Length: 226
Image: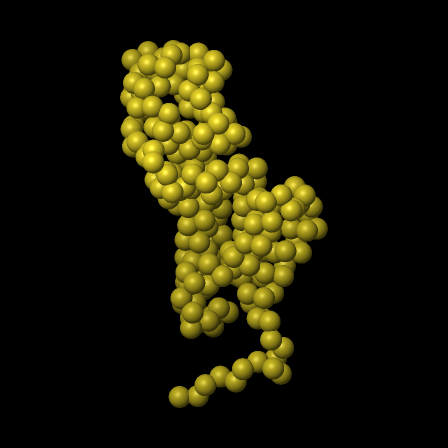
């Protein structure tokens, strides 16, 4: 089985050379996302952006190294929306809906769906890329929300219980928002993009369930007394 090569692209001595390598990496990312790893030939990339096969092998070690470099670039781009999120120390009624809507839009973006489709088949061959994808999307979302939840749990009159660890609560909320619709979107069972009404309905349901649970107050399980 072919294994991914962890080859760091060399720095080119000329500006033109560096630009060509950048163009090659960007073109490779687009073609790999559209057609998959096996269907893309090195010659296809050279024909699109110029250069030679020696460029690919000198800078990336081969097609596998180019794939890894191209997808690592894509994974870094996936992190950008999270850098703009700043939920601060606001109350749950304000944070959860806005966070949920942003996370759902990120999860269903064409880039995210394409990356997930590709790594469904290639993740085992390129574990470094798969890990980077998780670190720059799912884990970033979980970490950001978990830190906010933990800060809320520490308040004197906390709205969120500390009975469940903050990270577990973050995982549950993110899953409620995106898991079902994202899976259906990946296999083509959802018409994209979702309407604003659909996004609002999905997120509102998740927020209500997260904050209030599924049981009615009269059927809620009694609290244990120690």
